Image (cartoon, rainbow, N blue to C red; front, side, top):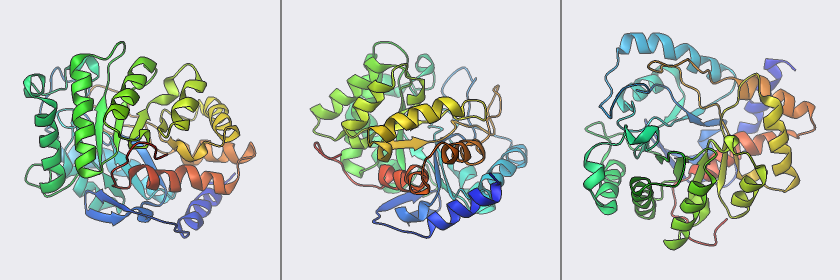
Amino acid sequence: MSKLFILILLHCACLVHGQSGVIYTVKGKIDSKDLNAALTHEHLMSNFGDEAASIAVYDSVALFKQVIPYLKKIRDLGIHSIFDCTAAYFGRNVSLLNRLADSTGLHIITNTGFYGAANDKYIPAFAFTATANQIANTWINEFENGIDDTGIKPGFIKLAFDDGVPSAIDCKLFEAGIITHLKTGLTIQVHTGNNVVAANEQLRLLNTRKVSAAAWIWAHANKADDVNVLVDAASKGAWISLDGITALNTGEYIKKLQTFKDKKLLHKVLLSHDGNSFPRGGAIRKYEDVVTKLIPELLKNGFLKEEIDQLVIHNPQAAFEIRVRKTNEL
């Protein structure tokens, strides 16, 4: 199947708008329907490999030279929006994201929150002694007044849990995320992977605060050993992020997506690569295989155009539109 056909498919789908809300990009507020085709878990840059939480400093000339071709490639393939999941103290630089948006025409969405995986080394020191409310106030301030002095607002909350039983700091950061959601309506996307214990604890904490599972995205859910655990979470309203897609693993994603289709839960799935075009000390992971590899294979395996639209256009709109989601909402 030609790339031109896929581009036409995505373009035509983007002409059909349904109900919508509001989302903040680095360029400001947009109607959620204007996201069009979106990748919901990527990294444009990161400090991965640095020894401790720090404010990101980049060689902007080198970064632009390296990153822009990857972004222009997905733009030319029909992607309109990309969610940057690099958190503060993990390499977030919203001024550079703003310039990348100007250079490519893409909607780029940044985040508030802290990255609690990697043995907590990217969590700033104050968070260990601060209360959940104090941490939440930091994130709420970024939403209400902009990040640093840029005026740029986050479009979602990004958190991360380590493997194993959730630690006290993991749970405190998640509590802060819930408080922030209730104040701002920002969706909480959490690096959770195959940690079902952590996923269940996050669902429990949401329920304790009377917040719907629909306010939560299980990031890296593709790593879970049992797809039925993901189906159960989706049936409760959670968003399931299958975000490790490459040209070499489309078969396993098609199987998972077929399960969600059979369970009538495709409307709770998000697709992405967990790509990174400017990692420190890591390999570049490109952003194009959802369009060039997975979508053609889904169509060959009987998925309908409307189901592709659901996955790459309508689900991101519904998952990230800014609104408080209370218990019993799916």
